[in-house]
Image 1 (cartoon, rainbow, N blue to C red):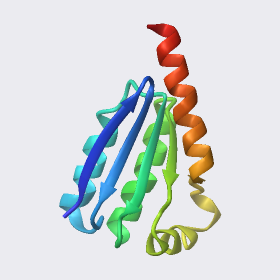
Image 2: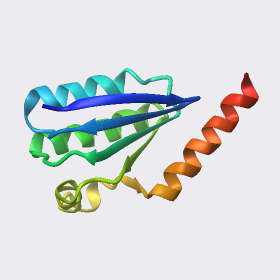
Image 3: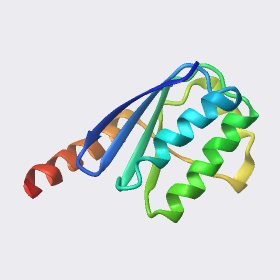
Image 4: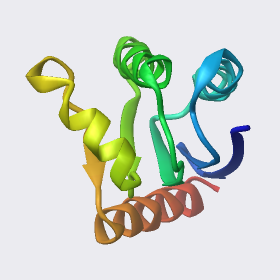
Amino acid sequence: MLTVHQDHIGDVAVLECDGPIVGGDDASELEGVVTAREESHVIVLDLTGVNAIDGLGIRTLQFLKRWTAEHNIHLKLFNPHICVRYALEHLGSACKFEIVNLHSAMTLLTDARRRHQQAA
């Protein structure tokens, strides 16, 4: 069963996913959490804890990529497990995801924290 923990720093939402993304319940959980972050400028999906993904999970990620683009939100994937990377690689060029490393994610969060503090 998928669980999603949420952290927010200014306009950046970090969604830490734990468990598999298989079947309708997991896909719906992920979709609901992401689409509820409509006010975010950036959404980082931390996929470190996702140890399995099926076709519905991949289609959900594809939907979320389109949905975030339509809402002018940048979707970034952080540290996808090897099984998720394998599934994403087999999507081909039709659906490219931005995968960020630790350094990029930390820079993104540091910048968001700085913007948030300046706005306060």
